[in-house]
Image 1 (tube, rainbow, N blue to C red):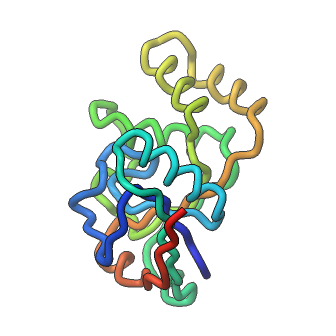
Image 2: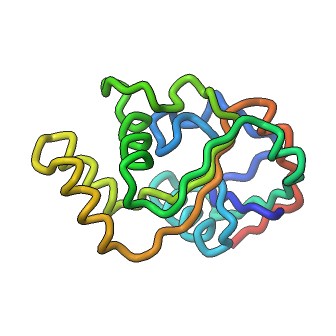
Length: 166
């Protein structure tokens, strides 16, 4: 399987310690199976932080990946995905279902884009109930998929094939 990571810098080794802790699925290295999604992320990151837009192309052994602990989510609109993302993004939120402790080697699921991030903020501030957030999510266009790698064991399966400057 080929996966893409959009960035403002190229690198040879993935360092989980440099990854932001409060992402959709917790601290991890995020990739997409969509080149276009990686391109948009590279453009966005370079605009925000400077640097040179690039896409890192990885190959992953799917058979080896399936042997690791994982969690998979379908399209958003379901309560378990929303609560999981909320718990990972907000470390103060009391929740038992999260990946703040990297209990999963890797996770597959929809990207909570800026529109969903806004809905989550409204929920956290008490403006929407979780049911209202879920109802509003149903009217959003289909979201793209992300893969997140959370442990050294999972990251070791990523084989950098090339860096494309875009």
